[in-house]
Image 1: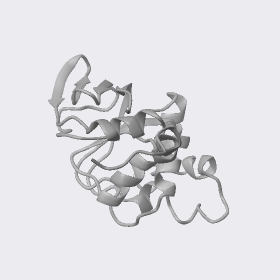
Image 2 (image 1 turned 45 degrees about the horizontal axis):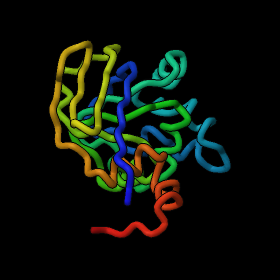
Image 3 (image 1 turned 90 degrees about the vertical axis):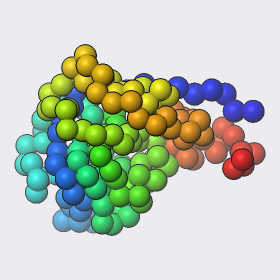
Length: 172
């Protein structure tokens, strides 16, 4: 039997726009032979040259985007780069489905909701168990709760740690 898992994340919000694809936040220009920490220094530089440094100076945070975050390639390194940036979660109106699954499999919390009311620099609190997002002290969104298995995968740091803890787990 699997234990009940909860997941709450908080951090400073860094706002991006629509259609932020994995090639923008994890440029192939920096990938060959480089580790995630190096690539993270250049993350999003086509979109916002100062973003990686700003996120780093604030000890990480939560990325907020519009529609289609993580579209295009299925580049798994994209989630590793976000971990290296100390991104605690990504909140977006919609995600590329491969990115969404890669994020969960690699223990990066993702939250789909309307992001229009979230402003850059606001403190964001997300309770993935209840589906509630609070920005600057105001409840912004009540979204669908994530299934308990997904919460468990995220709270344990990804699919591999989950399967190590629950080797006999099967889809219900």
